Image 1 (tube, rainbow, N blue to C red):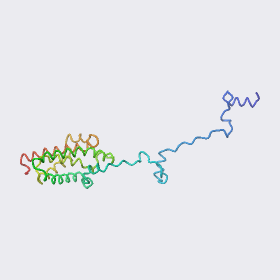
Image 2: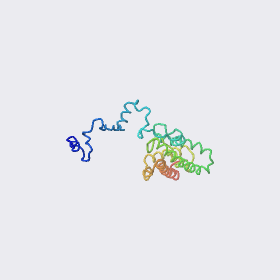
Image 3: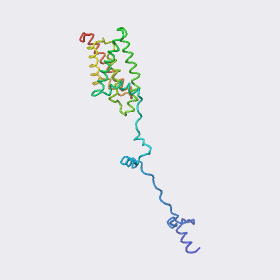
Image 4: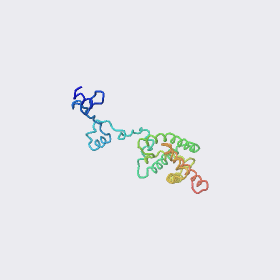
Length: 223
């Protein structure tokens, strides 16, 4: 073996293969380009909108799905929840007015059961509606969702005589208990999604119902 062969053997790995350091330049591997960092791409797209044109949206930047129209109409009580200030109060006021008009056309002996039925139906429909709207908005209990006030206000008016004084007192009492949330209403509010949104107002309605019937029983509220 000549001197050149000995040098190649020494420079190699002992099995006749040459060391990559001594390989011809044209045989060396080029460094592999790393893919761009997604975070830097997102920042660049935000600063330069033209760069993100035609690119699929990221998961974090994807728009939230919109709630169905029926759920939005029910949850806001046909737009009453969009009124400001105090959308919850507007929801209660709308409920009192609408139910007063409906009750005036219902026979006296059937009004109590009609109110109970209405409160139950609003609760059953309101829970899934509130759930879908809350998910779409990304807020646990959106202020514009007032179907819970509708259900609670109807509970307050169960077996209450149809008169402007009694309905006004029922409205005020319900709003007080809905704002103060005495026990266990706070705990009911922690229930998941639409259930927690609606059920805590049912609790406030029961408090108001008990107080207004005590006032009627002791003659402190004239019919």
